[in-house]
Image (tube, rainbow, N blue to C red; front, side, top):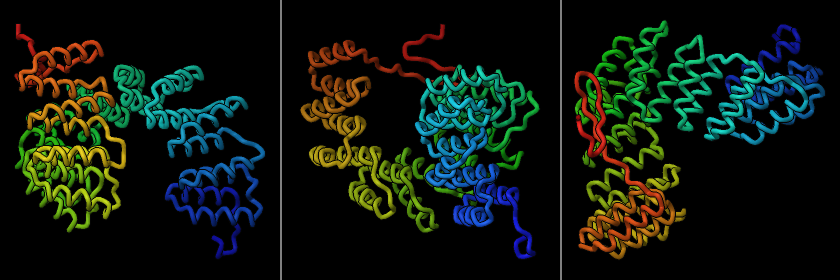
Length: 470
């Protein structure tokens, strides 16, 4: 356009800025910004809103706020662009401050305003804030469309308010597949797996067509239930619909077959696709680790490196778990020390794996010393790993110390009490067992009841310990 001698006006610049924002092309956006200054278009409201939106989508919030602050006349669009930028970067306080200013200046918030705020509250798991935003949506009479509805379902699900999520779901009249998927993932996140399968029956009666994300959620539900029959049925459906090569679906299928104990099918599914991302590799490594096949897990890790896939945080959790389960101390320590070469900082799960590795090898003193030298504050799970090793070794003194440390960090977790109680019981220290039970009762700590599931006549039935069939 410029080469033909035409001078782009404000509308042209706004369109280009929108494209730059969508592509996150910050440098190109800056060049357009420079042109608007040169062409004296920077005071155009459309251009300014376009600049705010572009900088926000490119993650340059400082530049976006600078443009926003110099605007002589703000409007709902400029506020929304800035609030959305803060929300995307999970800067909740800044987004709320701007929303407060917006209301004080009597700008009526739009649906986009609320969707941005709900997204930020979902990321920060702030339930009360989400409820307040939901109340404001109703107060302003904003119609609950699929965007706001799916965002509310997501935030209520993440905050363990699955009933509220379902109420929002029922409130939406015209549900698209995104809303249905939000509800499916909500159920799987809260382990309401049977409800997810029941909801799928409703979806089949609707006019909506399931997509790859739908099946990823449903296969995850069958994985949590360890229901191989349901998992195979969904596998057949994804093949019929042509989404069996989708990475999300593949990862879910590999995990499902592994949790159902069908290692052969898990491996067959893994090798059947060429679109293997790091999540897919992690699923196989973790699968072999959980089944005690450390050799295959480490071989899979080496193959992953050869294919140019960069391991991540979860990869090393699987690798270290594999070494821990089979007592490969040297391999485990080697891989732990190699994490820094991949730019990964060890976290709580990795330290817990090493403690478990040393403990299973009978090196309890080394495990205790390893914990005490950790560069981060040990979490309760790290001390519980040592406590578990002490239970196997029958080391009362070190077990008592590890339990005290774990309980001081997380006094409500029953695992530490039970493990220590088992150590006392194995040594016939019944007075200590009784005292520990009294402490549990005093602290209001309840042992989670054991449960199991069986599948009968295509229905999954759950049983709690000491339940009866009659």
